[in-house]
Image (cartoon, rainbow, N blue to C red; front, side, top):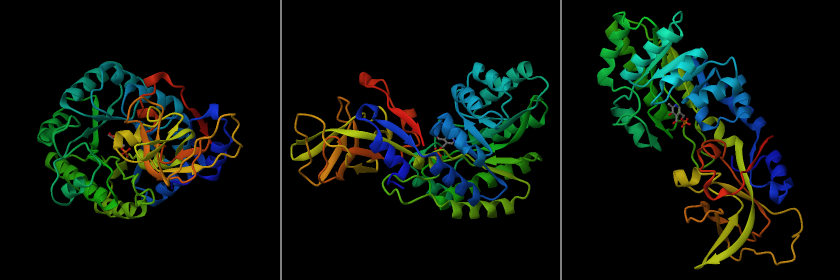
Length: 403
Ligand SMILES: Cc1ncc(COP(=O)(O)O)c(C=O)c1O
């Protein structure tokens, strides 16, 4: 999963130094991966892609044959995704939706709103009455569920926890009965309560995801029973694990799919939905660059590469070493000055920023590394370019290649 595909390797070696760094996306690899994910899931499970992981239009389009829709979390994502993959259902989530964003979403005919609070629900109802008076707007209430037992243990293993403890995300479960009652007492005629949404954590493996999904579904169905209503949809979120420290440890989609099939069988007629981002797109992207300099510092060896964490913030944000592969340069050294090269077996790859935090990967086995060699950082297809602070130090932007 970290070695570049043949297409990525050829492009990384074929680009001129001035054309680097570059994001190289292997769309054929993405297509195959997404098809395998879809095939592992039972038919009652809808697969939405969380666009925040990587909203490049080519990525969205490559995923289109394999997903039932897209989850968007801002007005910006909403208009962007609606334009990139028109005619695909959108679910509009995210905290702090503004009146303008809600209006835009209603005008676009968004199928589902993931409502984050009682305040947002009232705002949506009022705006819907004005903007879409003849439609009943689909709502999933997002809850920050309290967890216990296996599902609480599951959150212990997460890399980013958004629920099960105090956070700004979703409604508190203590509000559930009051909020649902507003749908049954006729005070929200513009809105149609479709179900429940919960995204409680990122970075969970398949057994942990299943424990959390079961808790969400069981809780939702109990809520429905208490109010004598049908909640036809439950969205159990994304957060399927991607392990940057053990890139071969892929999320077990087969096991997850089998577990979800059992959950569906226990709740006939229920539509289950998942909305992964990272685990769909992370593996299809590489950040390719060139070694500018190799130097010693207090006994350690550093390679400074074109670009850095202002393009690929993922290792700085998550505190890992980005998996990478060194590709020795094809061309002879073209310069009159000598070529710097590694004297030790391990090299730390740093970027061009004036901060010690600009480190992409530490102590990588790279004996014989030389200036001009190419380095290709893997697992750069999610939360990479789009979460980076591009303008710091005003270096040029990377190229983008969709292979
Ligand atoms: C509501 C929601 N859904 C889905 C996702 C996607 O998570 P991941 O990319 O870890 O699968 C996120 C990520 O933060 C999220 O906040």
